[in-house]
Image 1 (cartoon, rainbow, N blue to C red):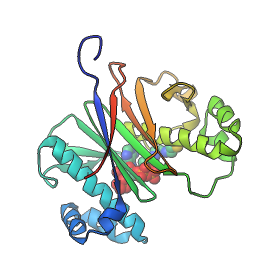
Image 2 (cartoon, rainbow, N blue to C red):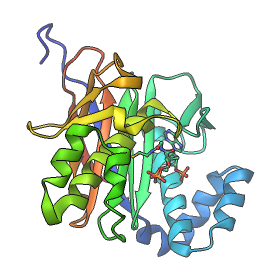
Image 3 (cartoon, protein in one colour):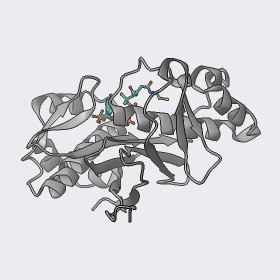
Image 4 (cartoon, rainbow, N blue to C red):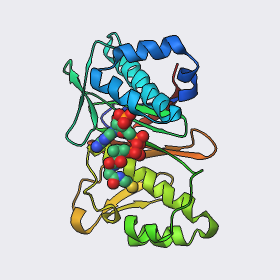
Length: 239
Ligand SMILES: CC(C)(COP(=O)(O)OP(=O)(O)OC[C@H]1O[C@@H](n2cnc3c(N)ncnc32)[C@H](O)[C@@H]1OP(=O)(O)O)[C@@H](O)C(=O)NCCC(=O)NCCS
C-alpha cells in the first residue's frame, strides 16, 4: 500500500508463443478476421513464416488482452498507430495502455491503466555485433559496466538495449533519440534510469522489471510512475 493507503498500480505482462497460433488454423483465421485490410496485407508480405506468425500472435494477444480489460469483444475496439507507430486504443475512450514485442517465437504484451507502458523482448541467440556498438548506444557508465563483463559483455549490453527499447516504446518515440544519453544503473535490485546531455532533465520517474521468458531471451517492461511508487508487475502466460 502507498503512504496514502491506495494499492500499488498493477502492470500485467502476458507471454505467448507464436508456435501455438501456427498450429491452430481456426485461431489464425479468427485473428485474420479481426485485422484491418492494411494488417492483412502486412501479414501476407512477410517472407518468413516465423515472422508472419509472430505478427499474428501479437495481434491476437493485444486484441484479446485489451478486450478483456475493457469488457468488449476482441474486434470491438479500434486500433490506431501513434506518430512513430506505437499501437494505441483509438476508441472507446479509456486510460488503458498497452504495448507489444516479439522475438524468437516469443510474443509479449504489456497492459497498464493510466500510465504509459512499453515492453521489449530480445534473443541472446543472435550473431554478436562488433563491440564498437557499445560506445554508440551506451552511456559512459554503461559502457564501463558492459566492458567489465568480459565474455558476458553482449548479455550485459543487450540488457541495457532491452531496457532502452522498453522505455522508448512506452514513450512512443522514434529513432531520433540519442540512446547514449539514456543510462541504466543495474547495481541495485531494480534497474534505474537516468538522463544526460540532450536528455538532461527528462522525467526519470519510471519503473522497470526484467525477466527471462525463455533461457536465452531477455525481456523488459517500463511503466511511468507519476506517484513515484513502484507498481506490481505480474508476468502471466497468455491463454
Ligand atoms: C519500431 C520499433 C519499436 C520496433 O522494435 P523491434 O525491436 O524491431 O520490434 P518489437 O518486436 O520489440 O516491437 C514491435 C512492435 O512495437 C510496436 N511499435 C512500433 N513502433 C512503436 C513505437 N514507436 N513505440 C512503441 N511501440 C511501437 C508495434 O506494435 C510493433 O509490433 P507490430 O510490428 O507487430 O505491429 C523500434 O525499432 C524502434 O523504433 N525503437 C525505438 C528507437 C530505437 O532506436 N530503439 C533502439 C533502442 S536500443
